[in-house]
Length: 337
Image (cartoon, rainbow, N blue to C red; front, side, top):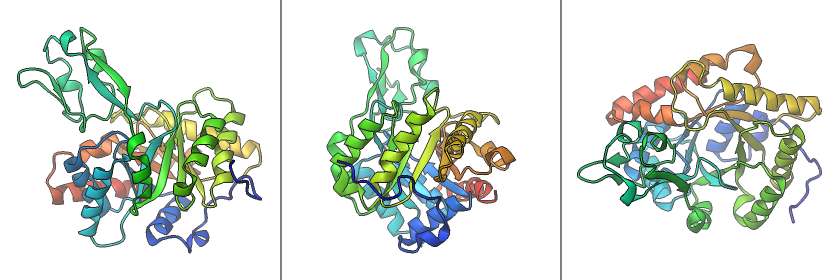
């Protein structure tokens, strides 16, 4: 059973409440309270350690508040080694977990007999996971399931399958580097969340919990009930990450508007019920233009943003010092809000 708290909805995060947390968590919660939070989203199913090391180094040096990683021991060990070489403060390390079949946890599957080696899928892949030396090959560690390659295939040889994280979840949750967990959900089912939290309770009680979902046409009562389950479970503040266009990788100035509007509607749900507002962040379609949009009065209550594809592509092929400098410029735009 999920343990109930005296207050069913946690109050908004204030810097004064963070004194008992680690330095990294305290800094992250303060950034959220001040509406200048920035998170690098490494990808829930992205496990290429060399690339992850490069991204972690660049965005840790750039002052990102959080690095959101796959629940993979090699990934965590790689990032741990990177952070050991860097001066503190370090960002909070978060791992992303699927509650149900969520689009952030997929990998491309190749039906080899159906593949005609045309190569049309190669330019669609943002991580160069697909190569064609002689026959088509897919690097599963580089693939993070964006699905851009699927519609390019004329023979339907490519399909998306769920990325299995179950075997590593306990070890990843137990890793001392992990201080936060983001639970991704497609269905936003309160009962499923309650069951999940009860199952992993020993590993979650001392970690910050973030819930990531798309509101789409979900009833406000369902979203609030979903949040309430986590808020009643955790003695720590529970965060919400509202997803717009997941893994869009879009540089368009309006790409993040769906996420911004979804967050604004979510905030309205809490306000209409007279409930204290949790820290609400956005993801999906986030790029450097989002930092400007966040300054609009409509979005002043949004705590910040998590950026995935664009943040990765921005530093992907730069050498270490240039990557850190470029990442710092990107992060600074959100910090200057």
